[in-house]
Amino acid sequence: MATIFTKIIRGEIPCYKVAESDKYFAFLDINPLMAGHTLVVPKKETDYIFDLGDDDYSEFMLFAKKVALGIEKAIPCARIGVAVVGLEVPHAHIHLVPINTILDLNFRNPKLKMTPEELEKIALRISEKVIL
Image 1: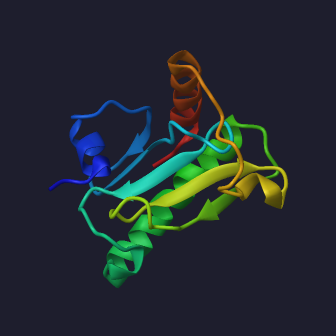
Image 2: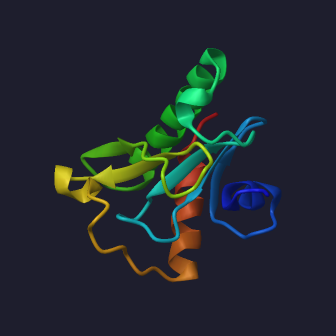
Image 3: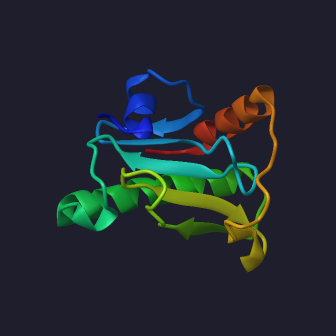
């Protein structure tokens, strides 16, 4: 059975896409820690990030870097925090979170409540800044 991320990539579930290549996909987390919180996933369904082959892993990280640089240009922040947890969805993914302090990357923090319009604007701002 396909993961929720595969369904998002296929367009079966709507998302707020910020970037896409032939192998990778980035979209806003709809329960973000901070505005601009983005998930980056490989299109090929792989459960665990460290199950990716070396070349795919390197390409995946380079794609995530390009997305992170776009987020940094679009969302005022001190840094882009990077987290790989991988427990909630069995599909390799990276969280890219605009942060100002280390506490902003705490997954126990309450999630932001954002409207579809707010998410759409943020996704557009980021996508305009991502250079693939």
